[in-house]
Image (cartoon, rainbow, N blue to C red; front, side, top):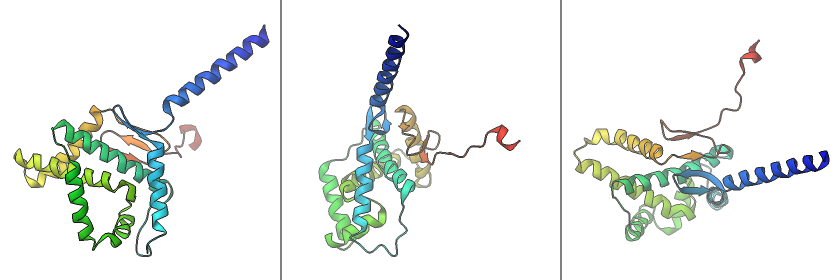
Length: 203
């Protein structure tokens, strides 16, 4: 009887652990019901690293390790928050606008051949270029909305920050601890503090 009970408890514990893992697996962050998967973030990281080998990076200050992981998550998180914020004020970016902006940027960097160098320098994976463009356009449209509402130009950066913070709180952003800690008051992902000293440690 004792053996049966022990096996049963172990089995239940294993199942519970498995189910808990399933509920969290794949989530790098969430914005409300929208999930940014770990696979999405890892693809961005791997692509950024791979694309660095094809350009001259000697004059670039490039992120590596945990900083790179966190910055790529931050990229997807803020793109999602900007989209959610734009939606909340009924602003939308079209595919045609993304395509047009892509061509403008390609011309600005001196042609398609120079685009990889520019993207590597900016820490943007080529596969995320359209996401970046959409985020830029959402940001611009939100700012235009503020201007139309009579917000002074000098106050727009503060208003943008306030909107992103509010959007994060409304949508209940969560971040997987492996990437860092989400601060809802500043709408920022920071490194997790792993070297906290307990009160007794100093005695």
